[in-house]
Image: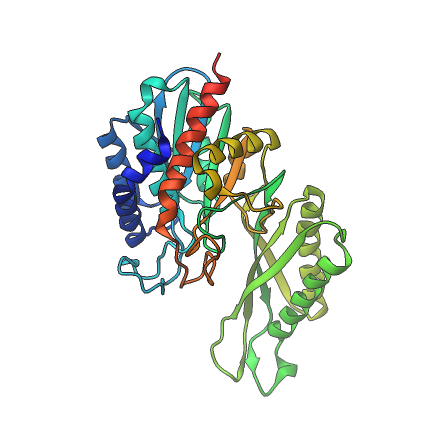
Length: 393
């Protein structure tokens, strides 16, 4: 099958699916409207759909070998300001990371693979995953049996990139995404009148020194040649007025790195710095960690092979952006890639073939060029079919 030609024939359907998903973003692993929509589309194509953990799995073909294709489905807790006629209708929820595109692309690939099922030389396992942004969806699907019956031999995933020109590809060698350790710091002081600091215990002052101390961990304790990041992204107190010292100050942030040793160092030293500075200022403190994701490491051999299959489909329009890049963001698909050899690609969704958009993912004004969708769908399908063909016994 000429997957790119067929994908262009399906463009209207793929775009329609994407726009419905874009208008109805849902958060985390509880995404009933999205799941029902995807399940209905798959069943109409002739698939049997399994609920695996909080996600959906469908399969085309049969027997060995097995390749898994993954699309995430969840949105972000933020207001959309794109101005698009199909913008989010769900207040405070938006598809500003592009997962609606991933799902629409994989649905397009699913249709083509089902049409070509008789010629597949093995099994394509389709993974529709919620909860990427909350960092737990992939692992919960694994807990539900994702990597069993059958176990994939390789996996592949796409991510759209609004900053990358339309149709361009980027990839990673080895590390693709950082680990992510989300933390919350609570600093407890003593509330009091803003005019009598000597009668209060100032948790805000202690928190300011904690932030400075945490910054020093990167510049003074991490190996300079390693990529490490520790960011405090929110701080708030339990008072909302100008003349009351708060009882509690709460900060949240994350630790990100590719290096397991540096990761362990930062997790340990964060606790020690918070405890030490809090005591210095007569405060108490509590550190808790939320979701913690491993770094996503791609398999160089699988990445190189899949890149060749993508270039077969996309041709000159898929010129690869060099050098390979590493993202400081995190991806919970790492829970899969740590067990199964994997490839991960970024596909350009900029306004034209020379430029990216001004706004990137997680920006309220971000836009994605829908001309990219058939290329992503064809890329998914061709990678699956060609890999099975070349690895069948």
